[in-house]
Amino acid sequence: MKEKQVVLLGATGSIGRQTLEVVRAHPHLKLVGASAHRDLAGLRRAVLEHSIPWVCVSDPTVPRENIQDFLGDLPCKILYGKEGLKELAAAPSDIVLTAVVGLSGLEATLAALEAGRDIALANKETLVGAGALVMAKAKARGASIRPVDSEHSAIFQALQGSRVEDIERLILTASGGPFRGKKTKDLQNVTPKEALAHPQWTMGAKVSVDSATLMNKGLEVIEAHWLFCVAPERIAVHVHPQSIVHSAVEFCDHSILAQLGTADMRLPIQYALNYPERLPGPAKSLDLIAQGTLSFEAPDESVFPCLPLAYEALRLGGYTPLVLNTADEVAVELFLKEQLPFLKIPQMIEFALGHFHREGALTLEGILDLDETIRRELARAFFEKKS
Image (cartoon, rainbow, N blue to C red; front, top):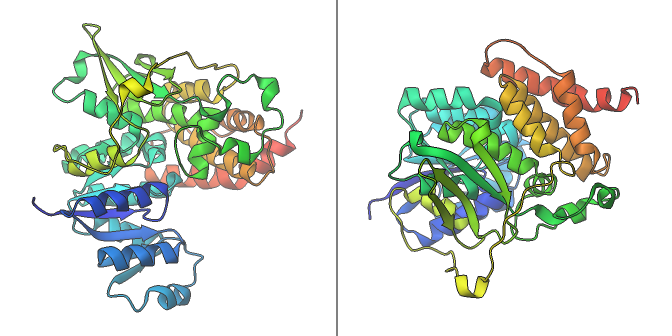
């Protein structure tokens, strides 16, 4: 099989490590670049195994002498910080898999698209905060964006051979997280450890908390809007606790096509990297008989208000989804530090939507400036507000 050159942004996180497993199982996938935020040991292991010629440490607070001490003996070019991440993203390759956490992946994704690189997107915040910019850049440069999220990959697969105009609605499935079936009174004293205990998936801390609040599904609704050009009122969320149906498409004739599989992120990663081919891989076969019943239910938006907040942000458009995303990042970080109760996460986000507002056309400069403002001012403004 013809070699395919891959740049992996975020090689040491949850998605990054699983991508390395996929690359290990497919010798035609050649890693030509990899980044880590600050996990030098993890990056070193990846370079030693895959002989990666370009690497980047994106955290500007990591001293360069430490990076040189840890990586300097390896036969690779070392890049640094935000500018280094952008340079790595634009380096010659067939596809760039972006698995960095949060809005930090936006500039690197835009740099990759500017260079005409196809994108395997595992960073949903990029489309949530700057969907119009990202999709316009991809169209202008003739680059494709292939989703890595299991839900969007399922829709992407179900849509093969179909037209956007044939879509009646998209159905995003959600496991319901660790607090499915709970009432608000049950969530008064939730700890970070409890919120991180996802029943089906192994994920990073931020995504796990977002799953517990259902904000993860709200962000995915916004992402689906940009990826598939579908209006928010035609994107539904169904809670599916077994996490077997990863999402589905209902067409205008009311037939529904769904993608099913084990709860294994290596499957959508592999599909994005090898598209349009399907190849054997490390994911296990799904035994439907052993699985038995598959069930679906409506999400309880009164208990998990982050989901309707995301729909409202998408309908308002402009900079509002960015405000939603950045406020969520701030709130989740405070919760993980035990400085904000679980039930106040949606309250802080709702406060931010009303407190931070920006008119005008969406620009990269405007996005970065507003994001910085929210990170600097939100916590103080929220805690000082009148009861």
